[in-house]
Image 1 (cartoon, rainbow, N blue to C red):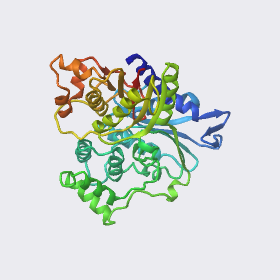
Image 2: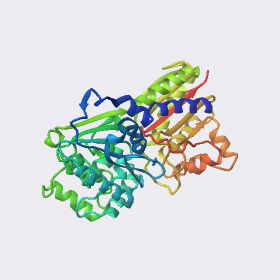
Image 3: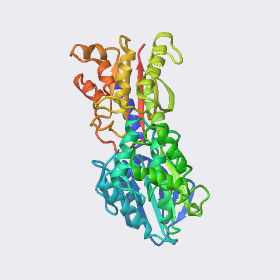
Image 4: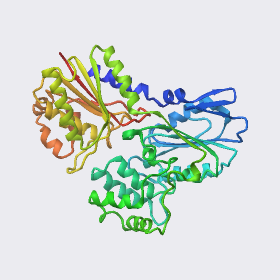
Length: 438
């Protein structure tokens, strides 16, 4: 069952590899560039710039270089450590994720400088993927990188959603929330976007570097107060948000702003694409697929209980699908950290799933990140089944204690049930696969 689930997962990954997504949506015939229903004659274009940010941006840029070649005048892509690739026409900057670092600031500055060279006769081709927000920290005036790092750590630790985190990031930045377009001096901007957020919201993916922002400073304060960290984040961040709420500093550009009149944002790959491909592979493996949702969110351990309950329903009563079956879903859960262990949201979900499935025969759960990393670890996620808890107990490990300590990584490492893929160089959130035998 582990082998089958991995084959299903791998099929989903192949469908959203950057080179596949870019090649599917970007075509050059002579001087005619086509993408998303847009046909653009490149002959009148003075210069083409490539600006990329995200875990998949280097791989996306590599495919763009295959298509456009020497037509590219200059390019910069900022990606996560270990995700870079050798490129011919674009410079690569590797930086920290999920907590931003100094390399990220260097990369974000390079992106802004690059785009600022463009003018009305130029084309800026932006390549945006998951991780772009953390990878491009360019703090607003009065805020340091350290202030952003501390705010990010607190947001990650309290279980804030990616929508909430990116709403705040946009308002602490000089580049996010559509502000990159403001620096493009009226150039034609086309963004190819690999989505890693629930609902594929353009203003949330990568903190909407090239998209109008629908959020406001007042939303930032509401989020921070709701999460209980308004009083603990750095004072300069609070001061900046209060200044924005009072109108003393401008908000991010909104829908209808003239700077977006020559901007096109196109989602070229998403979790839905991955789940569709995974479902086809499940059929090839001889099990009946059922895609439950591409919008799973909330606490990882609570999501695990619901998903495992559905799997048990299939096993015992043959509904909503008869076994052998494969339930497929995904999204982005969160973890409210209460312990001092090591893990990630997928391993946490799998550990909670192991407790929910304890003693239940012939059900396997795999939860893994499509980017190949789960939290600050080398694992993408983990496998769990009805025997996971008992196998661990035989080694003196308590599943309950490890879950309470958010210590899922050592737990699954000890029983050899980690999912190790290495960097996939794509990112469309997480996938959960539940296999139920006859």
